[in-house]
Amino acid sequence: MSQAVKAPPWRVPPGAPVVVYACLSPGAAAPKAQPQRALRHVLRYVKTRGWTVAATYVDRAAVLSSRADRPEWPKALATIEDGQADGIVAPSMVTLWFYPEEHDSFMGWLERTGAFVSTPGSLADLRRHRSDGSSPESTTAPEETVAGPQPAAGSKRRPR
Image (cartoon, rainbow, N blue to C red; front, side, top):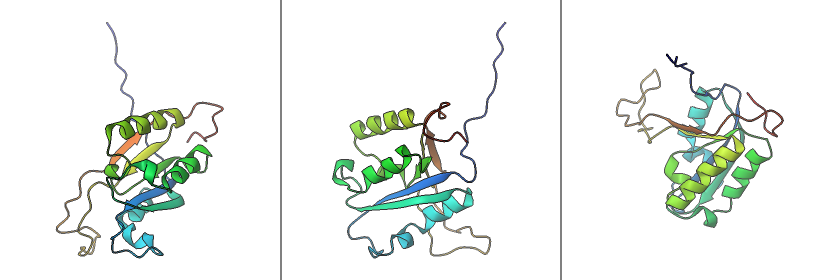
């Protein structure tokens, strides 16, 4: 008779440094000098989980554009590869990949680096909030987190 062992999924602990990455439409309302205004919900999501922002990268391109056409994308990846951050937080997964080959490439990168990616889900109506911070008309989908394997002993990245 075999016994199954139930193990909790790997969780990203508070204090984890993250890269905030976004691909904003060139016509997005937020001025180029203040992308944080467009990323309020993402930064709130990071803060709520107790993570720290190691770097913020914002590309101005169509969301469905190829990552090869986004100059800030390689910088986001390099920040993690250099051990300065453990994962990427973005407004939605579609900003990280759209084309199947980009998805496969990104999943391979996550597995190789042991990094994670997380999003707060769909955008909520951020204009109106209750006193407890919730939105009465929120259409927020559940958060999504995808993680590669935990870093191996001796890896450049610190295990948490």
